Image (cartoon, rainbow, N blue to C red; front, side):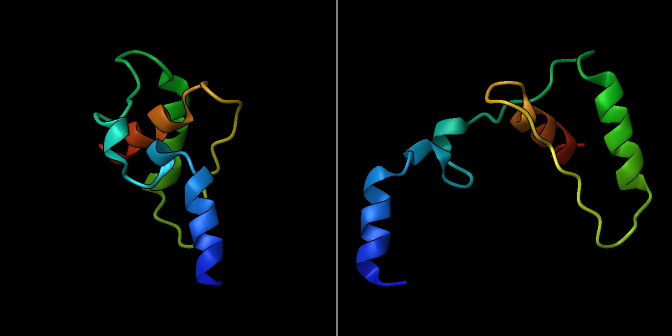
Length: 75
């Protein structure tokens, strides 16, 4: 991609949205006792150790996708 394309994109990108941004520290996590059923399902899928597995979290903004992802990451 041409350098000017990256420059234009950097001018409109949300700085806190970049990977591992310090603006999102500490990372959001699920509160104790919340999303128990969802986390149990995801942990069960991860414990199967099957290769080529994708777990896709989807939902509208603010429903907690990042909190679920970081909670699972910290397990």
